[in-house]
Length: 397
Image 1 (cartoon, rainbow, N blue to C red):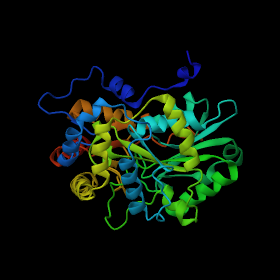
Image 2 (image 1 turned 30 degrees about the vertical axis):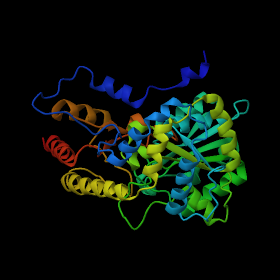
Image 3 (image 1 turned 90 degrees about the horizontal axis):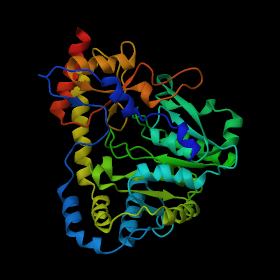
């Protein structure tokens, strides 16, 4: 067996299930889950229609690179969304469709990390747990960069020691962030690119929440946009991960893409040729029409703004909570221990939230998730409002 399997920590939802075990919440209160970031808005009908219309594609093996039509749609979307130079995203060289960003974020580490060296993978803290598991199973040591409210809930990259940068082979960033919704500014992304040049590492930017943001006139910047602003239209050392799960409310479609440095993607393509993870033809057809349409994405953002407006009006008087720049999460402080808060909320009000300590690690003498919970406002607006009222009711008693 791979000895690195012993280094994996329990997944947050395993810990949450243990926390809730044996508790019988009030039977008269229907359960409301704010714990899992699974979109519940309806998948647009035209995406489902395209999927069904191309089911005959199951008669053929899909290729690892995907269809030229899908890659072209992705390249055009990236260029429009992030104002990239015309032609700088070549569908043949700079784009690779993947079966959701989760598997790609994991596989990418296995491809780029050299396990024979004393490698480090840098991770934001708190973080999406796939980053840590990917680093460990690739043979790297995870090193954590804490966030804090004083820094706008952004990772304190300035605190990373020189010797850690020198050993870094892969840096994971998540912008907008999970669980904070904080957006890394363009100038900060450009500083990370300069660090990557100086210390010879790769940046993997998880941008799967980039299309859910508060201000319509101010979309979050991305890593490729930062590189282009430096005149780096080859996107060297930069790779981004995008998904239709959140953007188009299609988590079951398992569709996303990786884009950026053409040389890195060529090697990742080689890895995936053996890995055998290809997107079914009907999924590719549905994905293409999804990337070509923005109307449903704007409507999706409007629904989340409606939920933030309603929920924050209820919770702000009783919790220290801020409206995020992007994503669909709230990251409030809890009055006391975050595990106890989550357990009591489930026991008394049948509402599930995720303790912040389950999403973070002790680093630098602190756990930046302690005393916070993650609330995913993915349920229908009336359920989110009801959950907020129950939380306020529990706090008032």
